[in-house]
Amino acid sequence: MNITASLVKELRELTGAGMLDCKNALVETEGNIEKAVDLLREKGLSKAAKKASRIAAEGVVESYIHGGRIGVLVEINSETDFVAKTDEFKDFVKDIAMQIAASDPKYVTKEEVPSSLIEHEKEVLKQQALNEGKPENIVDKMVEGRIEKYYKEIVLLEQPFIKDPDKTVSDLLNEKIAKIGENIKIRRFTRYVVGEGLEKREENFAEEVAKQINA
Image (cartoon, helix red, strand yellow):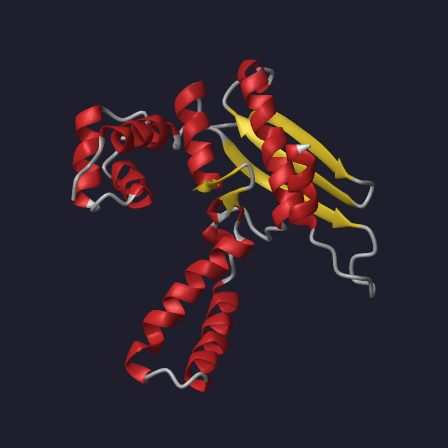
């Protein structure tokens, strides 16, 4: 596969790793940039990976209210109070709060998702695939693919970023870590919806927030 200079540049911006390391990672992963990011992190070549072990105990709690009907509180940590006060960090926090409002994740990371929930989902998906008449020998692969899609629905870091769906929230986080030069952690969040749990008409909040962004 031809690894273009623009692809190498994109990976370098995401990870802060060297050009040659980025190119080798892309060659090894056949141009898959998400897998290349993971590979660099595993090898400890990503600046984001090197910073990930450092303690981030400063930061901010940000609120975002959409139309008086959706409210989000999110805590995002940095290593120093100085960074927490920068416009770059503040803008990132606002973007994450808006992401949570629009996309309704349930967890920050995959690791937070209870294994019992995933096992239950796998059973449901397996039965769905069998009911669709899919051959049993490919059902397990189908289920794994659908589980990955499920993660993108419920896990914040796995979701496509609402302002640029070509990257995930995890990609955005790694970009900020590399650019700011400190470890950053999205620690926790709470999302409130007026009338949640009560019978109400369906709303497409993602579209509504996207319209506000583009207004």
